[in-house]
Picture 1: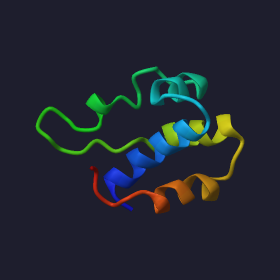
Picture 2 (picture 1 turned 45 degrees about the vertical axis):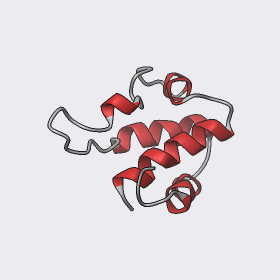
Picture 3 (picture 1 turned 90 degrees about the vertical axis):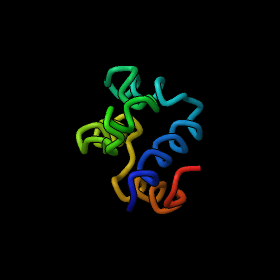
Length: 81
């Protein structure tokens, strides 16, 4: 599992449900900017990983299992385009 796969999984998950990443964040009870591309790397270029709490909120909102969510991670390319 890579940083890129996790972020792309969130994008794919949101898109399949008709949301932007911002919309998915809001519907999951998170700040609308939680999944913004600008938050994926720190100012020094170090990757910022999505918190487990944020992933848990997506899973709860969508009423799916963690296994189902992580199928998106497995399907995502290992590197960002």
